Image (cartoon, rainbow, N blue to C red; front, side, top):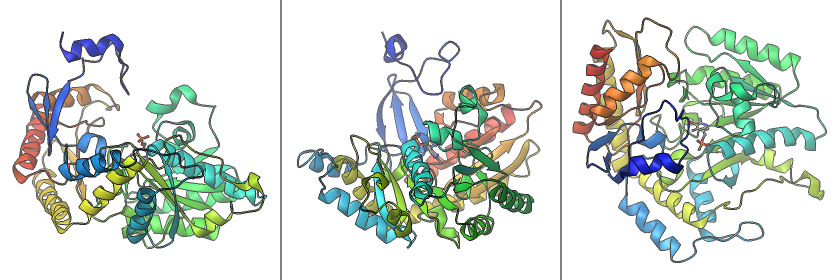
Length: 423
Ligand SMILES: *Cc1c(COP(=O)(O)O)cnc(C)c1O
């Protein structure tokens, strides 16, 4: 039996209807931007394995750091104990985060980073004896699959079975071009009519919605409105963080600083699951008290796992090298040329680029759903051609590892052009 066949006996995959899904491809090896399956077929990983892998598969530098940590101190509980890798991650993040971020809290994945931020926003006001229980989020947001994160997410596909079981969330339109004023106005109205604790957003790019982009000035205005009304702001940089937008964080483009930030995905260079929520001193102080009940009673068994921390340290160092910064610029320049080439194609609605993120919307006759027929046709075409891309409805996006070569990138572009002709 092949690995693919054995898989279906026991395994339940994410976002998968097993009755209709094809058997998964068994990957046996990865190097740089490439993956190989059990039949030795080669694939270009053009979405960095769900946005986690900027420095390439099986990266030697990160692997060595992990090995060294595993053979020194693989793990120790973080309740009542601490260790150098966690302290070093905090010190390193302080050098690159927006200046107002002063405290960091570890967890395991993007959803838990968001869960922590939302709980902190709610408890912040509870601790101050202020009744504020509503969270504001964008339409079509994606913040993860645990309950508070799902509540904040607006893509019905992921959440429809759980409607009516969520914390209170109200939604504002994303301030894409032409919709800025409506977004600002809705935010103001909702803050007046609800007891709002926090506003959570994906800064500048909504990933799961199909790389929907909006301008930093609009986000600064929204954050400004929240500040005037003492609503805490949460920048979910789980996707955008660590160079994807061309700057270290998407918030680096924005004139206003958030109260909290959520980090995961590329944090460990795509090696070990780990996440961080960061806070201002002001947020931390609402929990700092002689009363134990005001503490944040949240934690995960593997909080601040030293091995994960060692991977994060190596990753952040790699990100800051001139080589990686040049790679990000190189890919961005290349995307812009490709965008110019195809945006006027009769079958293209629009194309957009920010940093290493590129997206193109393809015309379709029918209203295209998230996992609709055009999406499946495109996906299968890409896989057949040896390119890993996961379209969102009629939107094809590229989010490559920063080390992807020009030749590999060209093959991805060529394949997308062919696909546009095909559908
Ligand atoms: C992927 C993602 C999450 C969830 O992260 P997981 O590690 O999958 O739980 C949250 N927010 C954003 C913006 C994401 O892209």
